[in-house]
View 1: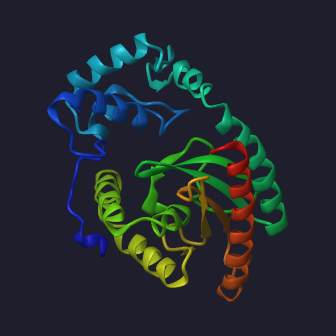
View 2: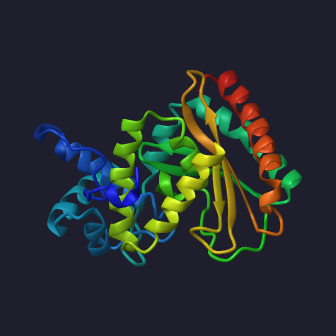
Length: 271
């Protein structure tokens, strides 16, 4: 399916909700949007615009979320940030903490061996969240750090996850992803994102030859959980000099082998 066939939906809404659950869904979507800027934070006006919601509505939700410590407001600039209760709730999932620690060792060793940057990305609904990052390469425009949240279709890792999903689920995800892309960046990158998806589909894993960020080559493989579903992706990033097209099959083999090790850890921790 071509990206230009996708219609627009609200960037802050993952699904169409029944009236009784709209408030809850908006609150969750608001927290997810806040989590996209964990260091810089959000002004109220920018947050309302990003979520396509009235400023007064967003302010009411934020007041409640701040009271419950799911969101905090920085004294210096009054920007809204993720709150401590987000972290506290995560403590109820020790198996994920165990996997994260084990995966860190694997991702770090992979980055060193491949002389590039390695990321582990968790699937979060229609988005990915960067869970781990290791390695260093001089690149222009690479702004993905631990905690970064972006639409799945913007990353070779996210595309690798999409390749494992049923067609209808992919269509629904792309509806959301394209809407978010248009809302934040306009239509200028859609052709490049489509080109990345098409090339990736031809090769059977995520392949980005500098399509989105010039000079940044990236390759992704899905990582499956104990039930066999792709819950994340391993991503390798570098330059064309490091990873020219004639190394593509080698890179695929390296990614798949390391992804298999991550899957073993996922099974060990029951993720």
